[in-house]
Image (cartoon, rainbow, N blue to C red; front, side, top):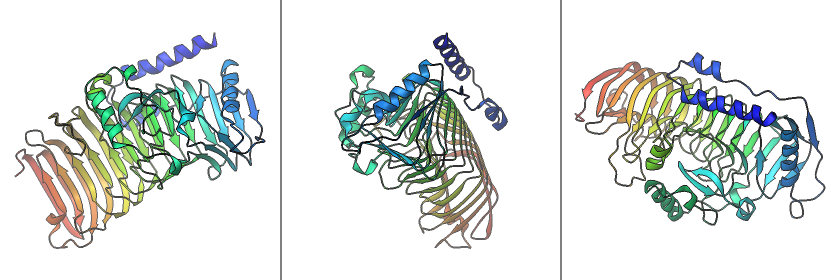
Amino acid sequence: MMKAAVLIKFWICLRLVAIGKEDSLNAILGRIQEPVFPNFKLEIPAPSKNFELGNDAPTINNAIITVNQAGGGIVELADNTTYYLKGPVNLLSNVKLVVGCRTSLKFSSNSSHYIPGVLTKFEGTELFNYSPLIRAYAASNISIIGKCVESSLLDGSGESWFEKDSNDADDLRSAGNDSIPIYKRVYDTKKLPPNFVEFFACCGILLENLTITNSPFWTIHPVASTNIIIRGNHIYTSSTKNSDGCDPEGSTDVLIENNIFNTGDDAIAIKAGRDADGWRIGRPSRGIIARNNYISTKCNALCIGSEISGGIQNVYFLNNFVLAAESLIDFKSNLDRGSFVRHVNVANITASNISDNCISFTNDYHDQRGGFFPTNFSGFNIKNIYCNLTSSSSKAISAVGIEGYPLYDVLITNLTVYAQNHSSDSPDDAIKVEYVSNFSVLQSSINGVSYENSWPNDTDGT
């Protein structure tokens, strides 16, 4: 009976995705609900062996299986201890995993501990790769929470993992672009590091109150999932490459709020699949809210793309503070991606120490494979942005479409920019707008000089 109930609940989640439509902020928030669990609890005592001798992954996974088969409940890890894991944690439906205070889950960096390969995604392309360190697949009503955010720790040992091999990555991109069957895309002997926490085809997710550090690759990666809350976490991954903070991909109704990001790559990046593989899957990301987050990153802060081939719509970036980044707001695609990005709302963002652009649109991002499938960018409402630029080459706005394929319907209001080394009497030096239609900047200022301009139909770049 319990299995039947889980299947019914999961089908409802999938159905909600199928019938989704353009929504307001309140409509999206109204659909996002926290998971609820039975009171049944299984406590896991502190381990008795050290990292070299012990492996606590089987103990944790067996406890998860037991609670799942009992109809759901809580698996709680002891306070004041370290669990050493030589393999992934696999979360199952109706299970809440609780990490105690002053407790760490320390994951091995030996790739052989994460085979055989599982169905996952790497930079927007499906494959069989090393298992994510924490994984849920086709599960519903699941949660991982910390009892004490500063000391409930997930440690992925990212500095000890191998880095991405560019030849292996190119081979996978070719496999996706050439529609090689997924069962032939087996990469669990290659050098494509796993994501840290991944929810694949799941519904009803809460990730809360954890410190997550040393990710081997992307840190939090919901894929083809819906009804997701990522709240109150501290994500520290600045010491590893490609360590994005949170990358919802092909997912619906996602709330990312009250987190602290200190990342080595993009802090928050909305994804929807890469090139032909993304078209094949055809699953957009929609109903994404990122609000009240505190961000410092070596790359970009609030992003859409570049893997957007399934389409992205109804995104809200609200009330975020950015201490340091390259670009503050980055909408990026290239001529292999196609599809659309539309109905994006950005408001009340404060940023200092921005070394590239405050607001950036590009349809010409790197890693192109020679296609000509421009992404349709339309329906952007951006307002109340304060941005401090630190480089003489930085732009307040860099918005460049493609000839014949302009950026449509963009309204930027109340943008305040202080641009170091730009002339205060020439704010146009900090603006680059080409190949746009119905693009307006109103009630804004650059270095204290008022600025307004409109480009009703600049489709030829003049």
